[in-house]
Image 1 (cartoon, rainbow, N blue to C red):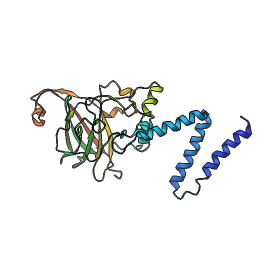
Image 2 (image 1 turned 45 degrees about the vertical axis):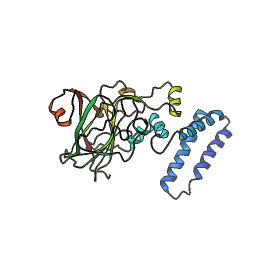
Image 3 (image 1 turned 90 degrees about the vertical axis):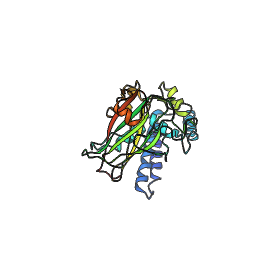
Image 4 (image 1 turned 45 degrees about the horizontal axis):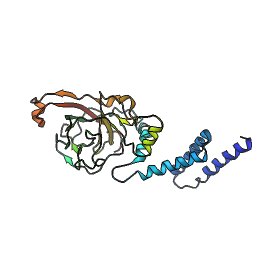
Length: 293
């Protein structure tokens, strides 16, 4: 490449950057100008052929076509598998406050799931029965009464209700509230590891790059309470084989729980209606009361 050619390419970048100079929204102006600089730098670094650039455009077009308003969000999946979702999460939770660690939201949340009573069973499909319980606390260790825990997980077949239309509506989903002592209790099944959807562009990318699509077993939680920052996190089974190679890089050591074996007829079984052996996991969430909700 000649010096003139290099200067012409740089001049093009600056011309595009300057085109956003009159954007009234200062944050939008910063975002667009930075996007241009970084994208142009990427193109100069890898020097794609025109065919490769068109393949990238087709990939993004196909990604958009795999999205819908309710269940499938392929762009979130792409962001997750590139580690961008976890990087955004890390940037937005840099201050160490003592609150529970956050992790990715994921593409399979559904709004408006049923409110469930303390200890109510949210599993309408078979699996290993489990009790997940604990407390929601402030960073000072005080109970948060009336906190709303929005919970969702896959069935034993590795699919979420909504994603799997054969599952009953609201299966393995529910909204639970803490009692006056900040306690919550969820009857469910032990979560299983599962592959993220691979029938779209993200799956093609994983196969082409020799990556597996598996996520370690987990429950999703979104915890809200007035005056507290919303907490989006998971609880992971500490014995899952995919903890070190999560396809979306979402595992944090502080979010691991053990599903201990419990016997039919013990005190918890009588209280929560387990007729046979079951598993128990306990975890106390800590929400940040110093930030705005």
